[in-house]
Length: 181
Image (cartoon, rainbow, N blue to C red; front, side, top):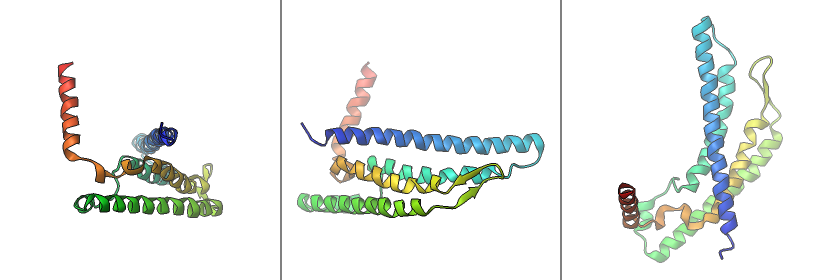
């Protein structure tokens, strides 16, 4: 049995939580914006706090979306160039890529934690709504930890090893199987 299998399952669970959280942040932003729109229609005046509150969710959406895209191999890559390399160099390049991703994640954790600890400002959304800067700052080290966790997936994070013909055949088989049912 693979020793990393429990960590890979945890990575998948954490990824699903990140997806749900990201969707929830988008829905909350939309809800706030729609409330402002309805209020403007009903009264003719605007709510001053809606924009300020809605934008506090943007860092959460951006950083969590980054971890989600990494998990599905949808990150910036020079796939065509790397796939043209011999198999041995392909593995070296993939290892280097994972190393750079790990370094980036460690920097997110390290500097993100320092940023979180130093976040002492309070966002004055309105007179009644005040949100600590720590709310948005904590997402930086959290995303670094998630990226580090996703690294247990290994080369599966990189699309360099995907055989296009095999993927196409699998898609055809799935489509044929669905049609026969």
